[in-house]
Amino acid sequence: MDTAGVVLSVLVLAIIVVSLLSNVLVLICFLYNPEIRRQVPGVFTLNLTFCNLLLTASSMPLTLVGLVLQAQPGGDGFCRTAGFLETFLSTNSMLSMAALSIDRWVAVVFPLRYHSELRHRDAAFVLGYTWAHSVSFSAVATGLSWVGYHRLYASCTLANPRASSWAQFVVFTVLFHAFTFLLTLVVLCVTYLKVLKVARFHCKRIDVITMQTLVLLVDIHPSVRQRCLEEQRRRRQRATRKISTFIGTFMLCFAPYVITRIVELVPAVPINPHWGIVSKCLTYSKAACDPFVYSLLRHQYKKTLADIMDRLLKRGSLNASGPRPENQGSSIPAAE
Image (cartoon, rainbow, N blue to C red; front, side, top):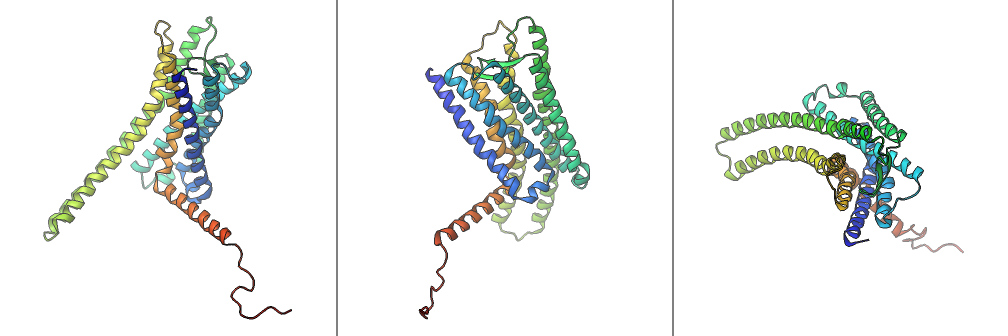
């Protein structure tokens, strides 16, 4: 294995560790905090975390083995099963991000009707669609033997070893990425841009009220006025930064891989094997980024983690001090 292979192997291993730890933390918060479980976004977050954990435990280690051994990990049947699981989990995670964006759009655009517009029953229906969508494409690819070991990506994924069905495989690949990556991207852009528009409108109204108040308070200190203006600017930037993070991380992690899969369909265009693995690592890195983008950096999750740490520290201090002796502090000797 050359130097690039070693670097890529270390990168995959680092992604596995970060993804495993961060997604486990999200799962712990979900199980610990009943308020998170009651919220509709918690259902979509749980499904996304579930997909990321399974992807981390199944596909990523196999890619690491394929990189190290430079060969297919396991037999053909095992690799087909792993390819089915990888296709299903990747599709499901993308659609879960789209579901989260729709939930956020409903919450911001229809705040007074949010609980009636998107209840847990509706969330279960949306998740049912994501599972049916993911299973359908994965089952078709597996049934037509279009999943297996792909040397360009050193992983068990979509691959067509037969030249006789090349045209059908091209059509399937284009449709698959159009109804997963492109559909999710369109939903993310439409919903989050709507959210940003509403957020900016509310910020503008707050800014007008704040400026009118500052004008009335003629005796206000200039430093206080400056702090108010700075808070207005940070509020506008915060909304833009969040939306950019949601869409930007999705594009950065998935677009290179999807474009490579489409370009791969043109035999005349050569693709560097190292680039194929890098693009695959970028898709894996989304599983490590999602816990921070959607959960762990939110106040509710940070507070839950802090509560868990406080409880663990208190329990550890009690165990370290040990049980108090029965007669400790008593001046009366025990009777013989």
